[in-house]
Length: 252
Ligand code: SF4
Ligand code: SF4
Ligand code: FES
Image 1 (cartoon, rainbow, N blue to C red):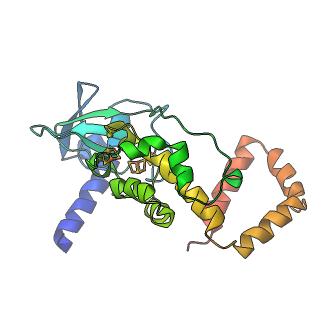
Image 2: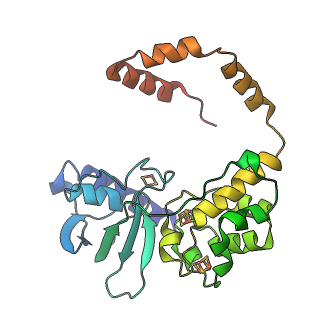
């Protein structure tokens, strides 16, 4: 993207966000369809902002608003395009003619296990999720992933028994469920890769001394007094404390 184009996009985003309060100032508008109904919204808003502009109030399908929690899974089609797209609503800008639907929750069976009771062996993942072997290598899960993870390769990694590759390759999974929604083999990729990460994290990575030290301090009760204090605060005091922490926290 050229520098000039970048500035133009930034201006339009700023303008669209201003538009939430000052409609008259908005020059660029698009029409989106939510659950089949048309809404005119300022261009350049995210899908989430645009839906709120249109009057929707998120009770589900919204969490961090920053691309981390995976709560805002969205499926859409573009006008004149046969493809079905998937995205995170807080990270994707609206486009004219988008047909949108929010996915509030993906029903998924999660195996019950205690990682401490399992051996460090790739067969553990297959024992709890044998359906992984039904993968037909269609790559639909990869195409659906808003994090651009190589989801099919991760599933193939589980079959090969390469827990390291699965754990490292799935680190940025936000558990949105869009891969599982599309999989013809009905695999729940994010639970499968989570078990691989847990096994790899517990058995293959050396313990982190700082973490061990902090756990010891907690077990010795070093934070009990502070914990009691926080529990006794009211909502306003908690809000102030949060704001202050955000203001003073170190940025790495
Ligand atoms: S969508 Fe399902 S069947 Fe297709 S590659 Fe992914 S895991 Fe395999
Ligand atoms: S792997 Fe699946 S659950 Fe994880 S971010 Fe990608 S689509 Fe979402
Ligand atoms: S609201 Fe958390 S990822 Fe979109």
